[in-house]
Amino acid sequence: MPAQGADPLAAFRAFMPAGQAASPLGLPALGELFQQAGGQGVRIDPAQLLEIQQTYLKEAAALWNQGLTPTPAGDRRFAGEAWAQNPLSSFTAAAYLLNARTLMALADAVQGDAKTRARVRFGVQQWIDASAPSNFLAFNAEAQKKAIETQGESIAKGVANLLHDIRQGHVSMTDESVFEVGRNVATTEGAVVFENELFQLIEYKPLTPKVYERPFLLVPPCINKFYILDLQPENSFIRYAVEQGHRTFVVSWRNPDESLGHKTWDDYIEDAVIKAIDTVRDISGAADINALGFCVGGTMLGTALAVLAGRGEDKVHSATFLTTLLDFTDTGILDVFIDENFVKYRELQFANGGLMPGRDLATTFSFLRPNDLVWNYVVGNYLKGETPPPFDLLYWNSDSTNLPGPYYAWYLRHMYLQNDLVKPGAVTVCGQKIDFRRVKLPVYIYGSREDHIVPIGGAYGATQIFPGKKRFVMGASGHIAGVINPASKGKRSHWTSSGTHFPKDVKDWIANATEHPGSWWTDWSAWLKPQAGKQIAAPRAYGRGKAYSAIEPAPGRYVKARA
Image (cartoon, rainbow, N blue to C red; front, side, top):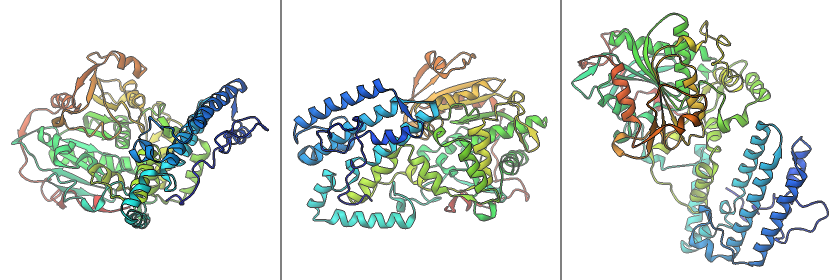
């Protein structure tokens, strides 16, 4: 919680030349930060700097001349009526927005390689977002008004909320007391039919009298819990697949503790993904299966398919990849964290095993969108004393998972740093050199247009590496909301192309794509049905005989373990 009375503008520094008078706003000048950065190799063209300075002085003078009556328009953080009614808060917000625009202009003007410029911009944006006057009780007019109206009760509740979040180790994004895994999230009926130290395999009860003969396996990301695909009955992708007549299985990852701190990428491919594929084949009696991977689960599925192809084993008939990176050329904002020094640090950190804490991963992802996923809740929970409303997706988002350190470090080097998967023979997994040219099965590739974790260009990159039949579909919204878009809701849009040509640049594909209203789920379902074979009578029991009998009801105990 920001200290009461702290000055959110105190860190701004003038970009005026040395010796020039202070800004008419009486604020510290802005440029010292960038002068210091210049000592680290960051440079700004003098002519461009002069233009930014002049623009700032002009806008600062105009703001000063308005006195205490400016309107900080265009930013929802300051849109409430209380801001307009409080001259000091209104002026502070307007001054903050002016300084924020100027800092970002300076960041955009930095000369250097693309990664350096991206890092400067990312760091400046983080600092700007943290410094917003809305984050401080001394300047937040809405929080002050509520404190007066409630006679201080909102402040007392805010302190209680802060202490609660300190105890639980993360900022509350929703009322977590409302949800319980297996009671009102992850409720699709099924049973655990296999487990080892890495995962449980869940089989779901058929909802149709007949099912397709070729079963369907979902591989979710192991950095999150699988029930993002099974939140509520009305938005459950798993339930949708079952309703379409697919005999459906899902991998439920164990939340690693220290006993799994030595596990590697190879372990997860061989003993989890490939083991799950083999187990589903054994249970169903099918020669091959259909599989789906989501996010990192898709990266792992793709790796497993390449391993199987190297062994000459055709165990998967078709594959679906949802917001998946296989070609790590375009990794979006996450690229700002990755360089040789960072990866070496992680490799040394986990040289003898250990865990990458789930809370650290969750914090990193939250700060990719700090105003929406951090400061919004700091203001609501602590300054206003509010309890965030129940929201199943945000409950899942707060239910973090650990990762084995060796797995994590290997993933960083060979995917994010070196992009080895798409270089034929560059990396060996489970004794096989990875070469996607051998993976000739039909693939369905989905990307979300506004995805900040797997940019649409990154998801589209998979179209360039598989030699077989391909279908690419783009959905509206982001990494999660784009995927979890139930067909029954009729929300958003998706884009398809009827052709079989996939240009190298996703922009060229988008230029020739056709928009369709509603969810991409129906398009995927129509694509998968021809891959699923004939229909047969639905099984009457879970698993198969004593070897794969029901261990416990879905969602199983692995998913309930907290990090």
